[in-house]
Length: 465
Ligand SMILES: Cc1cc2nc3c(=O)[nH]c(=O)nc-3n(C[C@H](O)[C@H](O)[C@H](O)COP(=O)(O)OP(=O)(O)OC[C@H]3O[C@@H](n4cnc5c(N)ncnc54)[C@H](O)[C@@H]3O)c2cc1C
Image (cartoon, rainbow, N blue to C red):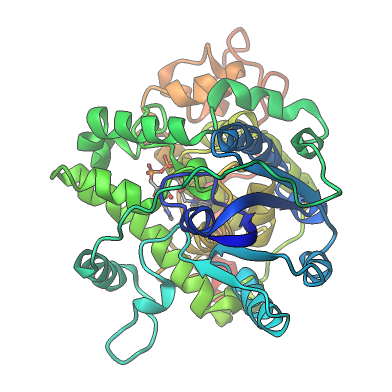
């Protein structure tokens, strides 16, 4: 057992199960401190997640007490300057789990070199992924650009691996502190009280993530292939924020799901597969984090229109399914996948606004925001991503509503102004001419664009590239 401190850099790993860095630190050291770096500038762009992180820190800190481990939160303007100061302290070894984003992986390389130079022991572990992204490539060594062959290979590669053995976290002898200037997690809460609403919908803890997974497997996974498309139903797992913040490892999801065999399990694991695919894409093609994966879209004639962008963000476009989605996002920090596709398509095709504006807004509002899924999701919708929906396939928000929210239950839940509107008009309230039920432009906006005109305009714009 080493005499020095074992430091664990906590990022997206709020879990005890399958937390390799934490397990190794407690195996090697009597004195372990877990630390979290709060870089305000970074988190200001991920406002909703500040709430999730605060709650997670609170919960994790409490649990670490049982292991005699302190969780220390340090505010810093730059990871680099934080570590440069840390290199001067010699009495520690350090451990962390990987995050599969190019910036983090590049920073890992810098840290590796610096720790070696300073003769400080360190160890980096596999993060929340099934396969390390470099492990899954085509037979000619190039990365996959299409999902289906990617997932066929990734699944095979994963199942043929020797299953990793669970590593236990050991209890330390005594609780110690390491950093002198720490902050309380409460200082991370978003400034305005927007987050208060999230408390009604979410309980960010590892125990709850495991409970949600089990409930989903026992009661919903069997029908997942069909019910996942209907936003008025609880058809999906709603595990995404837990996965993002590491309250649950995707290997645990895999292990629990594959105890059962049905159509729903395969479809569900394929969605986990999309997450793996997106992580592979952003790391092999990092240019897509700054702009279009497909370069031909660099010439696309996007329009700047702050008024329309604001109507979209506020859920005031006059298209009920779009508005319901945007309001669900604001109220709960989450939006149903089908509706993410509809609102995304509406922004980039009906309003011709750059997908980056949507990406930025989702980053600010989503509790499950992660770089790989968000950037790839937006480029999938915009048609400029790898294996994306073709640009000319334009979602009709009226037909999408009528197909996936037939009775308008989802719309009525999030757009209360439309609660009295009969089913026939719920996805096209502008056709209702009864001011006793709905006064257009007063109770609820008229459509900000006409669907048919917007569709033609989008197709014209597409011809320019
Ligand atoms: C424009 C756009 C932006 C998106 N941004 C994000 C994001 O920032 N973070 C995020 O986690 N997902 C994002 N997604 C993907 C997807 O919408 C969410 O993962 C899903 O809605 C989460 O709900 P769930 O956990 O109930 O999903 P389930 O259907 O229960 O799926 C289980 C898990 O599989 C993964 N998954 C499911 N669908 C997808 C998908 N289409 N692509 C990649 N992974 C998927 C997620 O980790 C999810 O938690 C985005 C999709 C679009 C169209």
